[in-house]
Image 1 (tube, rainbow, N blue to C red):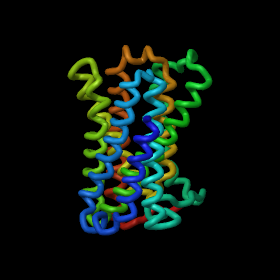
Image 2 (cartoon, rainbow, N blue to C red):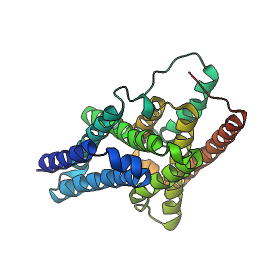
Image 3 (tube, helix red, strand yellow):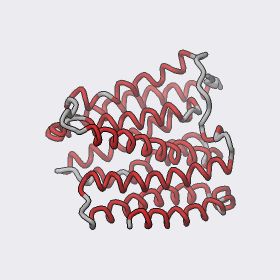
Length: 272
């Protein structure tokens, strides 16, 4: 039943993608909002179906994973329709010619391990669950980055860098508010909302600076995977962990914003 619902949604998405030339060109903001809402609704439907059928946490993750796969297929179809290489969406080969540019990604490596370092890894997870987490995180990272730092970035180029960075960060934060509302108190909820906005901000800054999306997909995948592989007891220190992450995001985001501003003024383009 869940697969039939997801397949039905994919058929509708495929039809909209094929006919998407005019809306995406004439109304880039509306098109961007449409993509985000479709993704959110798709995940919500999958979660609801799994919950109603009492499939448990693993079942819900599988259902959500199927929904993300369907959305990934739809956005990939859209991108390849626009550019078979998908280069205009940031899918470009990385070369080792510019070590300085590569240093921009170093803080991402630190951020990835904040949660497992503080909470420790959960060694009680079965091999099957670990594999599921890895696969789920991979498809989530690809899908969300392709939408927010790929398609929306490409669609809003005419609006300017500042507009894209603010729009995508706020929109990314809003669509992730559902997770934040699971917090136990107002402080936890506020910190998680800020967390979603800031992580969207630094990723938007990075795509603007480097025009490369693959490192962002890898980071998103690793961040989600490590978070789910972290010991569940970390929830007891949730406010502390989110606060540490937010401080990292603020420092990193400020640095990236200054570098981007300096680069814009000097009219220097980073190339790999």
